[in-house]
Image 1 (spheres, one colour):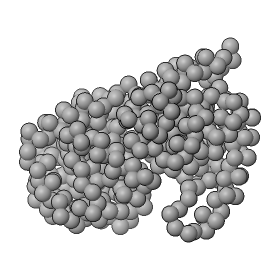
Image 2 (cartoon, helix red, strand yellow):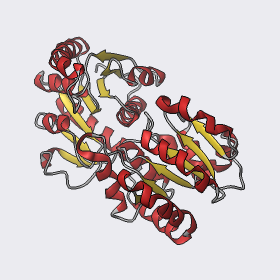
Image 3 (cartoon, rainbow, N blue to C red):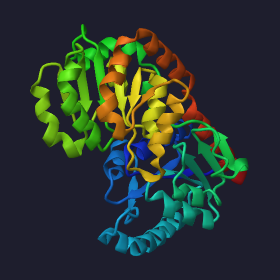
Length: 366
C-alpha cells in the first residue's frame, strides 16, 4: 500500500500552528513513511515555525478582512481568488488522503478546494465560539474535532466529536522538571514565580498593565518571568535590568517555564487555555477583546465558570487587578481549588484522539 499523504493548514498565531504540528507529529509517529505538507499564509509566522519543526510548507497570498476600511480589504477578493487557484494546484499535485485544518487564514481556501475536489477533510476547532470560516467549512467537512461542549448550534452534530485541543506533549509531565526549570531560567529557588503570557504575538494591554503594576507585584515578594512578544521587546526589555524580573520575547521551553511557574497571568487563546488546564497552575485570564467573535472571553469564561481560573476583562483591569491578584497569591485554599478544578477540565489525550479520528476516515476512504 502506498504511504499516506497528509496536508495540514493552520497559522497566523501559535494557537493555530502548534496544534497542527502536534497532529503532524502524532501522525508521523504512527506512519513514519507518510508524506506531509503544510499550507500557510505567506507572510505569517508559520512560514518560520513549521520548517523549524521539520516540515515543508507552501504559502498562500491570503489575509483576513479587517474591521475597518483598508488597502488590504480592497485586495481581499484578489487574494482569495489567487489562494483558491493555488490551493487547487497544491491538491492536484500532492494528492492528499486527507486535509486537516486547524484555523488561520490559509485553511479556508485550502479546505474549501479540498472538499470540492472530493478529498476527506477534518476541521480542528479550538475555540468555544467558532469563527465564520469554520462555520462555513463545516458544511462539507467529514469530521469536526472540537475542544468545548455545546457547539451543536454552530456545527452539524453528527460530524462533531469532543476531543480537546492538541498540546505540546512535553507539557504533560512537568512535575518532575521543577529543579531543572529553575536552573534553566536562572530563577531564585526561594521565591515564587509569576509567569506572564501575552500569546505568541504578545499583548500590548497586558504589557502596559505589568509595567504599571511592577512595584505592586514585586512588593509581594515574587519574581516575574514576562513574555512580552517580539513586537514589544524593544520597549520592555529594559525591565530585565530590575532585580527579580526577566523579560523575553518568546519562550523556547514552555514545558520548563510551566514547571517553574507558581502563578500565571495569560491571554485566553484556545491553545494557551488547553495547556494551562494540563499544567493546572493558579491562573488569571485576561482575554483579548480584539479577536473574532470575542472568543477569548468565551474560552476563559468556560474555565472560570467552573472555578478553574480567575478572569478579568480588559476594561476592568484598573479597578480590579490588584485585589484579584492579592486574592490569588495569598489565599492557599483558593489556589488549591483552582488547580484541582482546572485539572478536571484537561484533555491530555486530545492529540491521540484527533489522530484516531483522522485514521478512521482515511482507512474508510481507501
